[in-house]
Length: 120
Length: 334
Image (cartoon, rainbow over all chains, first blue to last red):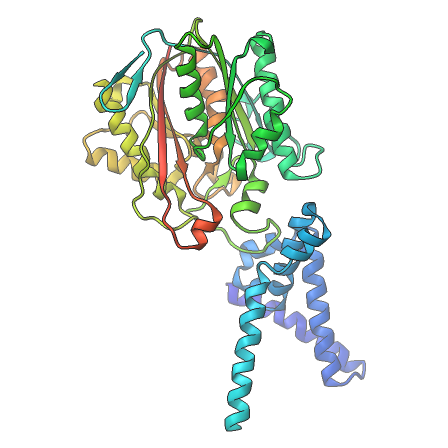
């Protein structure tokens, strides 16, 4: 079931992509617009206290796409606003997304080095 | 007052629970015990800027209410025992800073309420105090923030997880009175059976509850059937089942008169609380509201209240430590 919800979110992304393509934009810009739209929608729904309700039944379906990443940054930012904009929002914003960024970027560098060395 | 067995204190002139008060949050207001609260809140903030401030206000107003209901002037209350779940017990410290009563901060995690009641009874059983007060609070949002994830995060809660009760309970204990009487106090030992899952506190705390129950029955020579009701603090559905099973294994059948405050406070099917309620306020509000009412109406004549606590924090959990647990018991009779 979660797989289906994930597929639904990806289908929405694909529809946005097709709409951009129809508007005559090139492929790279279409992809960027899809990411921006999904990130915005997810952040907006997080702020409205709706995303966590979607996550309740959609599970990994809403967590795995870029929507989950957006939610994981916006939710601590909202939660820690009471501690101020510097040590609250600023410092705590990446408490959940931080490990994903660190190990995502680290693994991409390792894969990049392997690619450069062997040119697979 | 004397010690019986290894660890139980029996009060020969038992102190009275003079009055109680409790305030609950919006979810508790929709629970089966809603009508026993002195006040329920419409939202988690109660007009404050943060959840932590709201929790301080809840405990402050609960204490004010118990003093007002008891008709004892505040100056006559000699000691106050209080604690909560937030780091360094800030809800109690901030909420009660204007109380102007000698304050003894205590921490037993979710067992704090019974620890406070036991200590209040001890103080009132000596020449040093006529009136002592105990109070505890917890808040779903501030607890989630400190121990788990942001509320807006779209994650899923496991079925074994429990819902921290938003609210506070307070009891005023008096040296003399018409009852209900605190007749004995069994402070528990720390028990750690190696459970590491912070989303399964019921399983971690059930062995501690068992240890205290057995100690209480052994020390006092009573059997489970002596009580009209045995109530644990916040084992939830998972922990309740484990305790029922374990106690039967050790020769104490509690199946007919045992319930758990975490099971009683929410409607599992309607309120999506998974394994039930938890938090300092779980046992505190269920006793201060429902159970005290039943004792006053003589529907229960003898109860054993066993509050359970998980002595863990977010750092120890991340470091892979197991969860040391504790349970304290008091018997209350009319």
